[in-house]
Image (cartoon, rainbow, N blue to C red; front, side, top):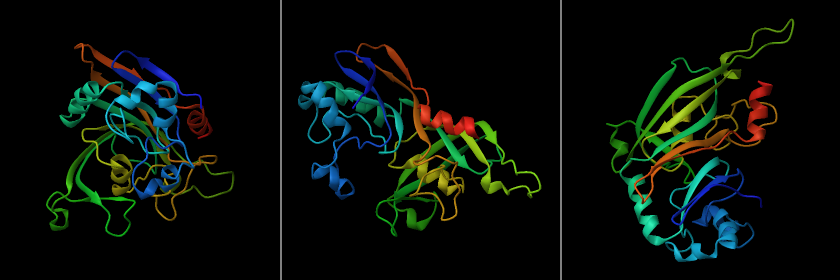
Length: 252
């Protein structure tokens, strides 16, 4: 697999992850990968950088944070255990700045907003996360999650001649999303919670959620990340939208 390396030094790899690949083997959800039927991103990286087997522990090795299988974009990998601890501490302390680009279903009214809830595993579907109100009794033991968004562009559905104007559910909004916490499926769960699921997201989308023609996966891309290196330098990484997602936008 052709894996683009955005940045590399003695401590860190910044990878431009393609959609459709699991980052590392974990849990029953990745049974195929566990059975060796599906190579993971860390498998590919260890093939090129065998020293990553000395960073952290299997099966995660030097993976600092995770992206969902169908989410593309910036992923950081530590080359040593010491570097892994250094970088993960920044994620834990919320000093890392992370931005994503997401296309959501519908027209979001406000130009920017904050979603703040508790998040925990859904009792009805163990694969999913569920958002709970901060003071909701059922939220006891759940973890705080904060997601901020800003509208980049709105796409209004244009009816063909003689057809009535389509309702707002066929509109789409392109967002810049910034997460202040790193909960599992946080962005997907939160945007669904405000009734604007990510376009193409089969797990968190609604039964009747539309999707742009040609979109076969969730439209979510890790586009920007800022972190401190062990040297003290502040490093910023950027990743453009993949060509297939650019095409979806152009077609809208």
